[in-house]
Length: 339
Image 1 (cartoon, rainbow, N blue to C red):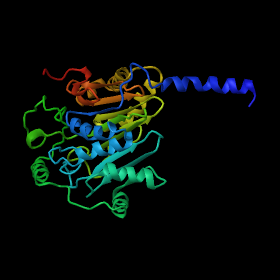
Image 2 (spheres, helix red, strand yellow):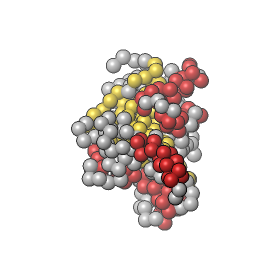
Image 3 (tube, one colour):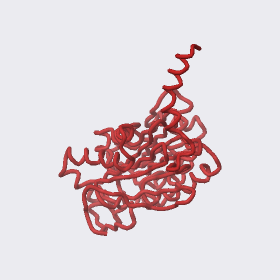
Image 4 (tube, rainbow, N blue to C red):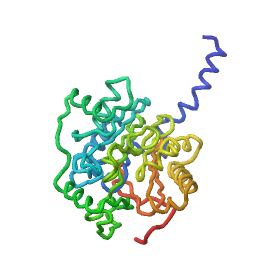
């Protein structure tokens, strides 16, 4: 190689080398963050992998599976509320540091859609499998078929059918914001529109993310929100950062929300400010509707910095690092009720 070519090539590489410098005093890694209070258990499982030097993608799948198996959580996995026809349909996606991704939508009878999504990513030329095709693929790859409609969720669905009103309830997944039980929603007013999004940065400074949900309770059969949509419910760019979302997915899809957050970080916004800018865009588009729903974004950058922002107060996220294990309430655009 000629000397001037070597100098030019080396100069172009310098910014990339600097951006991943391991002795950056502001860096905090490994780190895992996830949406809502229940993300704490998912983070704990993910941390076992991260703290042992494992890969972020493995930590993501392991953490998400904890939430999918929790029958007390009515928004994810087994025990999730069914659609209005009585079917529990699950959505999930996963994305690694190389930009590889996989997604399943409207998957029935399989407890761990996050793992099926990873198989789609690793074993097929596709990104998305849906419905019967996703189920067929799961069974062919060794997943066990089982009934996901628990007695509690079935009873709630049958009670809901008496009036069949549909009103998303804000922040039920946050135990600090208790709602008054109402049959206008459904028994106990359990959350009906949420998910877990989980993001991790491993010891090699590589990012991955995942998102998994049973979707809106009593939704129309076949409805899919933002959670399994790459760019909407989840996006990972290993040069910049990763983002995930929670809340009413239709509005997140309309602005390709998680991709927007990552691109804002690319432009120089910090993780929390990028989330804020994305929320403000949603609020400005339809201010009246924005006051009636909840949407939150959570982001993690390449340096291990994280942050979140939501339309309404009450959105929480969970954090786990070597020195921290905590649940944080994010900043917000509107106030819907006092603590």
